[in-house]
Image (tube, rainbow, N blue to C red):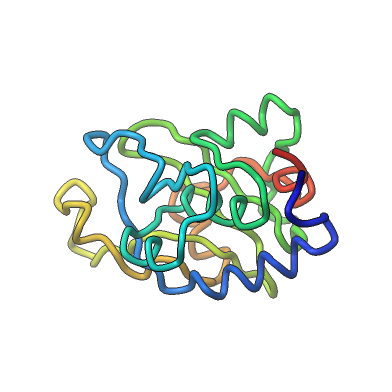
Length: 181
């Protein structure tokens, strides 16, 4: 049974996301494995906010937390799940996607771990990531030093420029990624 009907998901998504803004990012490293807790939050139920704030989150963890909050299940690989269901569509940088559309860059390898974001309002996205200083490289920094900005809302074009020609490769409409377990 779903905790929310689809009509209330956008409202709940916005409200819950507000509580997560500023939660620190936690970079996943292969040595960490896949746990049900931070940074992926592949849990059976929504964890307390204090646990999330203490543990941190990555971009997939943010998506899982939102799904858990809305009474859905979390996934270790939502790209694969959505692909099997046939609800992924090719990303088009010229399309203005509606609120709540899931933007996806699938995991490729340990260096290109992919990215997930949710379209917000006025050309913005909700997502979680860590910034590097100009002179830094992900290879040179351990996970505990990559924490900011964490969960933020910012312009889509910022994150869409990380991997030319564009970061995101696929999209999934809100009703499709939140509509069922």
